[in-house]
Image 1 (cartoon, helix red, strand yellow):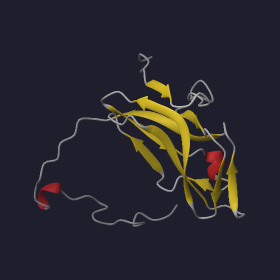
Image 2 (cartoon, helix red, strand yellow):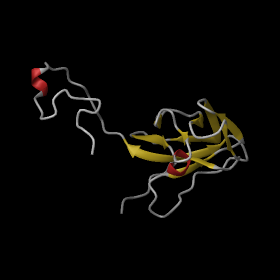
Image 3 (cartoon, rainbow, N blue to C red):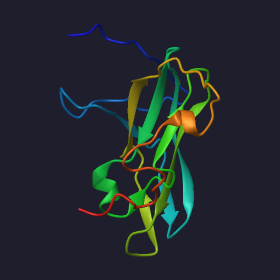
Image 4 (tube, rainbow, N blue to C red):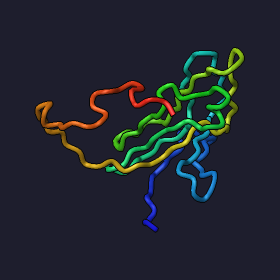
Length: 149
């Protein structure tokens, strides 16, 4: 097993809860709402976590939806939020209500998202001609071109 990666975390508010794992092998760490919020239908609201983190260089933080909230209709409108290694501001979770009813009430201390820490490879882009990209069976088909299963 690999050595544990240390991510420094600081509370901006004494009521903030540190990230926790739901199980021993959970990929993500649960993030909690600092305050109570009402998310109106088809509106996006930034929910405070009361936390700041220092993601190590060479890694990113990914804020992802919790499936239990998504199944009710409380989603992250951008699918996955990225926390860069040089960001030191408070973590917010942008949420949108698309479920039934006029709004969704998020309670203070409720688990609202998951934080995953992922390695980022060193990448450089090399400009080439279209021909140098090579052909594939899929080609330039996109937006559903691979079909439904």
